[in-house]
Every structure is written in C-alpha cells, then in structure tokens.
Length: 161
Image (tube, rainbow, N blue to C red; front, side):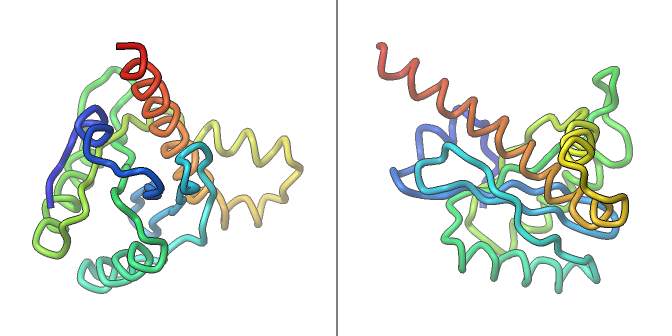
C-alpha cells in the first residue's frame, strides 16, 4: 500500500473506480464513497472503533464490497497549519494499514470539515441526537467531496494540455 498525493492518484485511477472518504475519530470512523464517475460523495454508516485489527478488517470488507480503488483520509491539521496529536494518530493508522492492503491512501486537509458538516445537518433540521450519529460520515463526505472536486479539476487541466 502506498500513500499518494492527489495528483499521483489522479494518474493511477481507472475510469469507473470509486474512492472512499474517511474521517478517523477516536471512537468512530466516518465513511463515504464516491459514485463511479467520482462526482458525488455519499455518506455511509459510521464504523464503531474497537481495536485496530478489527477496525482494519471492517474497513477492508467495506472497501471490497464497494470496490474502492483508494481512500481519502482527513488529516486534522490545526488551524495554524501545525500537526498535533490527531495528525500523528492518523498517520500512524495509515502506516499500520500498509501491512494489510494495497489500496492507496491520500491525506486531505480536513480543517473545518466537521464544522461544515454540522452546519449542513442543522440546516437540514436534523435533531441533535441524529446529528451526533451522522456527523462523522457527513464529515467524511465533505472530505471526499473536496478531493473529488480537485480530481475533476485535475482531469479538466490534463484535458486542456
């Protein structure tokens, strides 16, 4: 398994391969997956975290079921651009996944993704209880949608060359 930049991923993806978005939390992993055209991110149910080995098995079963070609994982940078403990934990998670899969990972700056997801759920008049259940997958969708938009932009630029 490799860690790629989004630009490197754009060069390796085949047409019709979906990409998954991950919002890695301490208690849950928010999930989303793209459509086959990689235009739209759709939330999926969150994974409750147990232990790394079990988390990895469930995540890889999800990837196999959805035929995921790559994971875009949110990198929770501090607002000043520095890397704190959550960034280190996310990088460690990806390093640990290297032994378990050949599916590449792409880090995506996720600053304010949870805030944006919460605002959207509030605008949709989702109750506080249901927001708590859906926030991680909504954040994963925001992370993935940002990456999908960038992939689309890269494809347009490559077509213009």
